[in-house]
Length: 127
Image 1: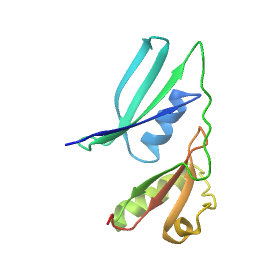
Image 2: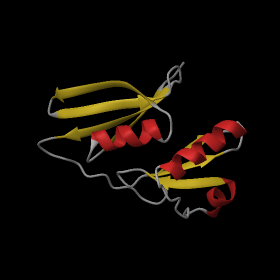
Image 3: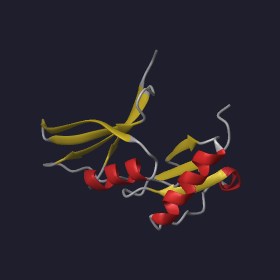
Image 4: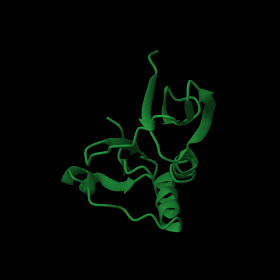
């Protein structure tokens, strides 16, 4: 089975971890420090063949450069889990933003992570 790692620069690994774990329910799957000048964390859902890696390079920091079409899309078809997710974003005072593509406003909600990347959450089934 092929696996997927999405790697992104971050300005604050602790904020990225807090956001993705508390809002999306991900787990910290691994981390590293001082690896050729890089620190990083891997976040994901245990048992799934993908995760997101966030890194900081201390001597040559790369700033995140998200666009309105750099999206991570998560599908939550279970109504109870969808409502739990909505409760988490409300309790954390996260305000959804209008999506650049109107399709996502009709099919879900778009939120922004601490580095400015957009995340779409939909309660539809993955097809």
